[in-house]
Image (tube, rainbow, N blue to C red; front, side, top):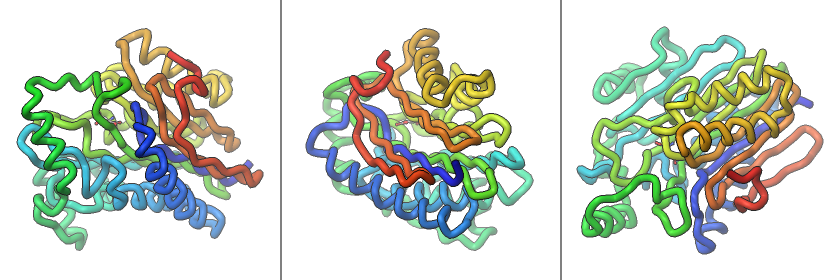
Length: 309
Ligand code: ASP
């Protein structure tokens, strides 16, 4: 049933103290995206509205407040895809943009698909966006975390997704609008202490996001290197196309992530009928959805509720 919206705010061992802020952020993002869909707005605009709320919420690892890389800087990645046209707009490793998904939307409106670093920032200026000082994206909490992690010596990114590990609060959304158009959008600061210039799955079409009105829309979170290797978002959409239900497709995709590369993460999925799939093999995952039936949910799900690993 049309319309439908599914969002996520990261899959990792979200501590009890952070469950409330995650749920509050998800609720606000659902409100923003659902308002667009129920006013007959597009799936693209609904995904953008929901993700932008979470980019501005410092609870999440996107926009201001993101994790710092080894050089102590914020570098942001974001992407958006239109299931009707297969157009996509993606940006990576930007350091002077407060709203990376907004910039990705400008790329979507151009003939290019992906712009990175200084070239992407130059394009932001051309599109009338203001650039910010890189330091203005850094918050004190992350500066302190960075110092702590520096003292700890080598940091294994994989531990971030297991209990007690460092957070990974990438955000994303998939939507189906009243005309049956699907879209997917995603935004992240990447994992803590990533190498400068490192780009994960989040802004990569087919890995962190995918949307095709003929198959479905998917958005992923988790350790980007593993998600890239299996092309998880496109894989889940392809599984949908093979007549699996969205829940079965999401579970099969996460099972493949685990089985093929030992990956940890989660995904949200919508099919062209507005049916939902959510699966993860991390300790917890923050997700929510609004459906035309009136069903609404925003929660930090437990591993036991998911399909398991
Ligand atoms: N997928 C993101 C990345 O690797 C991290 C995350 O989803 O939390 O950049």
